[in-house]
Length: 424
Image 1 (cartoon, rainbow, N blue to C red):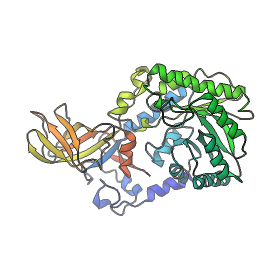
Image 2 (tube, helix red, strand yellow):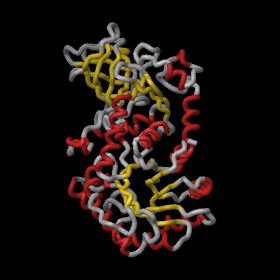
Image 3 (tube, rainbow, N blue to C red):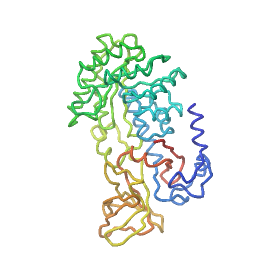
Image 4 (spheres, one colour):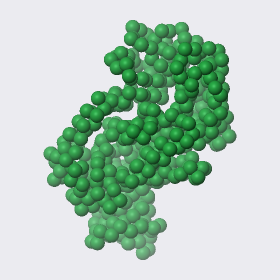
């Protein structure tokens, strides 16, 4: 099903729905347009246009594949970052166990494109969603979905919706990252009560424990490590109590994009349990990385000997106004650029006359965004003119993907080699 669905992606027609693409490409299929290998700068693309670096994308995919293998981790990257089935499959081809998702709609997208293993990092209590999941499980014996439980009430609601299902739904108890953190169960005693509730119904099967260390209050290596050891201890206690009897594997899962080094360290300490342990890492922002928030937070800053992710996004906009020596305006704004975790930064300038791309230095700064304009402060000596293209670095991969439905993947010389379709 995945191959057929991806083929349908390639057969989709290009038109006005996809901003930034060449107007003279209307009516072509995505595959036909990709086969033309147009140049991003001279091939008729309109500004603003978001580009994903082919080389950096491949580098990031390979780096996390190698990292997971080196540390004995299974990898289910969080698909809510990109919501791009083509990237889901590239991640799976690079060794991913499956894809993590956050809400049932995202699971529907993944299933449409043939994804067979999903870790749903949320408790699901919507009866319509649960009935759909049950139908998917019944129709496809190869499909596996694991989701959170974090309350007795949630177990009751799930059981009511799933009665009569062909096979039970796999669940993991979610341990909260601390008081005041997001979701999850606050104490080990309450975790046991929820596990008891799961054991009391036939519609659910307890397969492990999970949580998200990124929500640890005042997170630092010591606090994150301590919480991860609580999670491991919970798995050990459940196993000793016989809660995992009969399982072929036990799931222990954590890992966002800021602390996966701590996850690797603590998960390496998991003792032998009654069944093999699936140590499931869920980091997602790595696929494109970024030039701001995650560049500062990435664990590779702490373990540089393990490699380095590379920011793969660049938003190209055109200077449309230069009203004074201290100010310029480019034609990309809040509708185009992620800004929830920091404003874009001007990385390079492409000269409108010569086509030369030069480093922007420190002389051009984005000071604000309107809906369709970037406000640029230009220092003395800054070389930027009306008509020039500016290449913007972005912060927060999730919001960057979210704003673009069809994203050109561009080689270093500007050749567009493929397109990534998103479904938010």
